[in-house]
Image 1 (tube, helix red, strand yellow):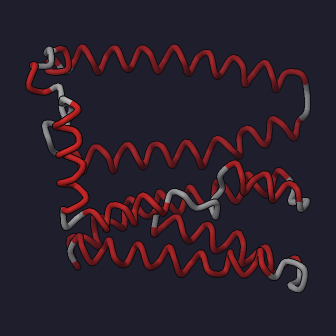
Image 2 (cartoon, rainbow, N blue to C red; image 1 turned 45 degrees about the vertical axis):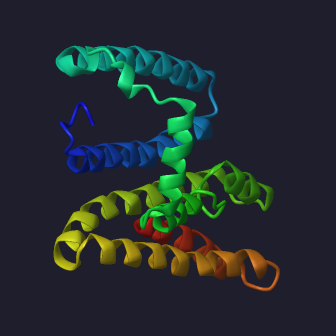
Length: 207
């Protein structure tokens, strides 16, 4: 809020795009290094982590210095008391946006994504590392596509309808994923993979 002057939408969209681009490139890069299997792979990844940490702290310092308002002290009335926090939470649960924001938060509780639990399951059922890396990159690419679609849709059909379409598109695209897991023993490997990976990748657009 401070850095953007209250206009957070363009900044959050750009940051989301950068985040998803990194998530698309990183699995492929690490997968190639792991596939090489040499001792230099560990040295390269360790060196990259060190360089990234230095760059990250430098950029945080630069943002802090370039935004003087971040250095302003908080006033006493900005620090909420326990009583104020309780009233604030009660008001939030009664607000018209509460159910919508709760439903959005619940979307992130799913394991039907390329997170740690799903990756562990896929490795358990013998999906190769290179395929998992490629599909994670594809899913991140679909997420990047969504950062371009969202502003266009919100201008044309409104932010509320765009949100509803997004929520339902995620639900519908995750149905094939559930079917692929439930019918894993009866479907062919190719069909199962198409439903599983295709559904998870497409669901990233809605998310």
